Figure 1 (cartoon, helix red, strand yellow):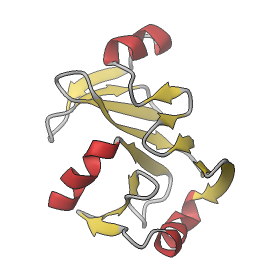
Figure 2: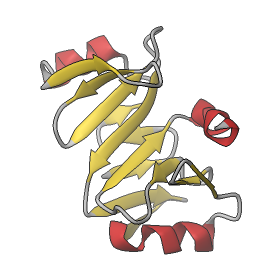
Figure 3: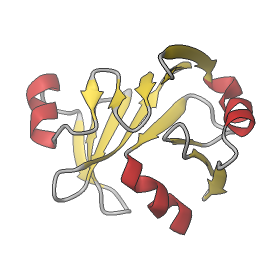
Length: 131
């Protein structure tokens, strides 16, 4: 996963719509509404979650390495070491519902289950804090 925090995951901008995503990627393997009332487009190794109004909220992807774009540089972070990386670099990180959330890097993940990471839209951080 290549992440520009709050802006882009791989080639998908956080300004994309579900319709644009379907036009680009084709039909998802599964489309459903999840328990927190977001509409999921599941493409297997990547899941996109949208609000009813069409705004992209989260992108969850299976990946062994996070390529984090920060300050013009790309930092390679193996997911097995992501928790240590976040705790060392983000003084504002916090835990909610078993997830470690990094406001600095715009992501959330379950530290003891490496392999999946969720990139967040900027407006999602307050929702995570309120959990």
